Image (cartoon, rainbow, N blue to C red; front, side, top):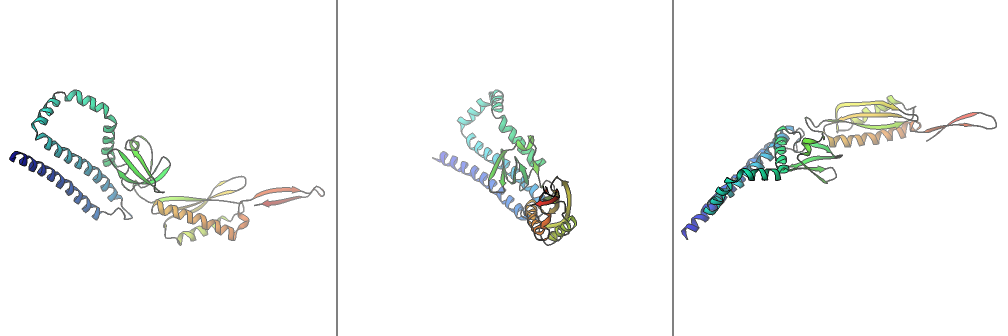
Length: 281
């Protein structure tokens, strides 16, 4: 009875110590998260730290759990003898296991590479497979993207090592964006340029870095106008582009309706032979 009680107490001490170490890691993570806020505007340093912290914590928890279970099992003589027998065939077994788990091992190595070289970080804005989203979670084997419409895109870690993707927050969250307008050749470009500047000055989403309107193309019926602007982050830029597009179209409708795209036709009177130029909206 005393031997059984001793074993139970020994197991409980080992497991309690392991549990205490894991909870200590949770406390350290919480303290760091309180000091560094991901919700702040300039969170590049926090995203770097949290990406490494998340991966290192998971490795540490895995090692603690493995060692705790190992210590418990090795306290049994039968398990120790079995372990000695396994060591004699460890060479062959390691080759077989390594071949069978090569995908898992490559993902684990990719995880280390992502954690410390950091082509992506937590809360990064990515465009992957034509989808726009934020990095929500990085595990040992996969990355979860929170897509803008609240879907989740799950990708293996190797994807970010082997394939190209867009990272909109690699060094800064600031971005430039465009809104295109198509108008008739008689459009007053300078008046539209002045209106664009006025609109951006009244909108708090504009970060006051870039404001430009240029004729970027001319087609057989219309000219292409590009409104170029900048914002502090991708979400603000999307809303700002929609705002500019809506108000510039309304400005043209109210003040220069004759500059909206139209099709011109040349009509000839059969009796007089006189030509008449007409515009069809």
